[in-house]
Length: 190
Image 1 (cartoon, helix red, strand yellow):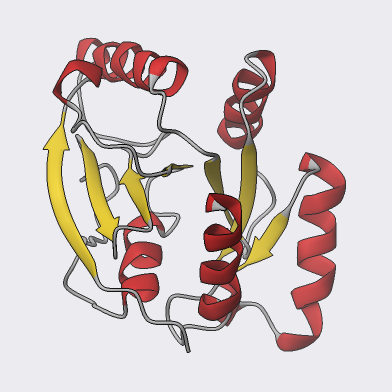
Image 2 (image 1 turned 180 degrees about the vertical axis):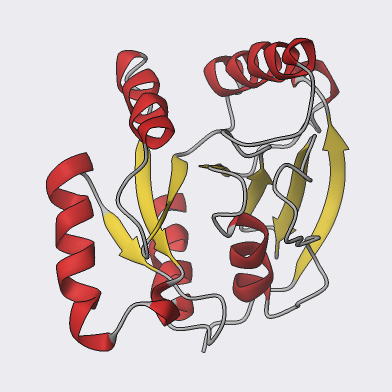
């Protein structure tokens, strides 16, 4: 299996604090607790790289991870549930919009959808926002280890029918699809 060494670089609250490098960047979008940090850890084969939590809304900054100087993954705060004030949520939204719209290094956004559930209202809202600005995006369907093997294709095809574009299955638990996802991201970097 392809193995990339991954390391944490820095956390940033807003665009002006983001590190300056020329590697392709993949920001991770998704609801709180959809599995973005677990995705990073599974890709890196390092369970301690990105902090995971059962408490939604723990990621409050943009966390940057370097994968063997091939690409950068930017873990963003989850949308949806978070125990923070309305003002804090509005500030996050402003900072994240600025980052997503003005960051030159972004190769493609990656939106995470939980394979165990129907696509949620805030997932649709995020996708609509991305489409308004015509940003490149792929979808990763997480938690596929909780979906029966016989339902994998149906789940993926359903997400593809609704959201369109490229849709990849993923399981951080047993690292299913890790290699294919890594290959896909590396090909996008070419």
